[in-house]
Image 1 (cartoon, rainbow, N blue to C red):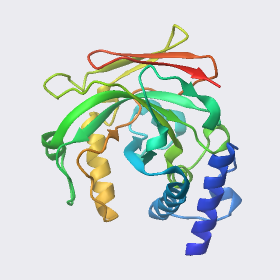
Image 2 (spheres, one colour; image 1 turned 60 degrees about the horizontal axis):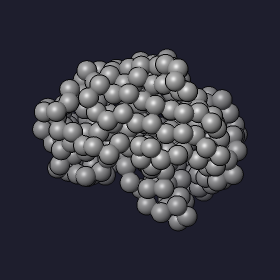
Image 3 (cartoon, one colour; image 1 turned 30 degrees about the vertical axis):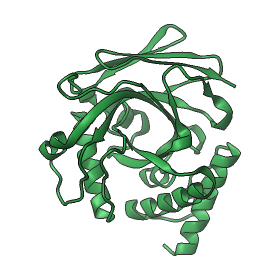
Image 4 (tube, rainbow, N blue to C red; image 1 turned 45 degrees about the horizontal axis):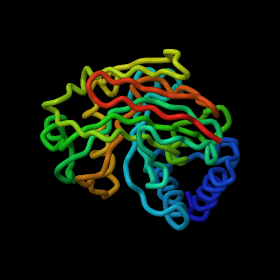
Length: 262
């Protein structure tokens, strides 16, 4: 695809986010076919536009790593994207709906590495050896597309629906928490909505990091130590609205709660 067409698509996605307006899929609007790597090229252009107005990126997110999300969106391979500093809040802080279109939440295990990874064919064992600590988190996804309906290429170009993350305040070593069997239960306004466990995420959350490291290497990018990696939803994504009180209870890691405000 020509660079000018990619720039046009990136601007279309950027404007939709800024205007908080749901849009039709780029593959339909622009009547173009592009492959997965071209979708990541467009994502990079969207991220570059956002850096001009929104500051720097602060974390990675990985999506479509669990059976619940694969079934919900009918896409059967993982994707990654960039979380910006301004998107991050912490346990107990109110979440403003001001920048969202139709947000949904999903509990996640976030992993931080103690060493960089930049090599071919990274293995599970290599990732496990390089984990510094983990903590509980909640991602707020907010697709720019009508009804969260999209193809793999559409969602990758759209920075995989990134729009928010809520982090807990306590870090845990792998000696302190079994992330494979860590359970998360989602409550909204006191009602149990959903639940999942760590092994629902790519059979182990560290496998999501394996995917990310290998995907970045193919694009000539190092996975750096110290950068949070959100490994994917342990449940399907559940809708939230103004006035909702959200609580996610984890077995070992810190619980996370927040209220959704205007």
